Length: 126
Image (cartoon, rainbow, N blue to C red; front, top):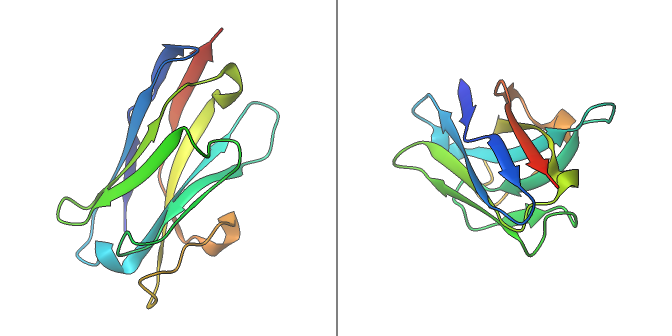
């Protein structure tokens, strides 16, 4: 599986962004997907995850209530909408995937994921 993240950019605080992660492969619906981010000088952290069938999701407290993860299995693409952006959201955002026989599985730790995209930079100015 190859992942291609896009949609990052420079945005003012309070603004919104929609990130996308396009995946190759014919078994997209059997892969749980997630977004992680890494700010300068900090460790990579979990942001949000979604199960293969899209029925289960998990959000980090830092983005809960102002972000929405979704996926279109027909287009083999995952999306992350983040609203009310804050300067502390500034980071490189990575999408990740892992094959799973459980359609409702949502991993939240980076070591549980097998495939990683190249990252897209989100910069939020104050």
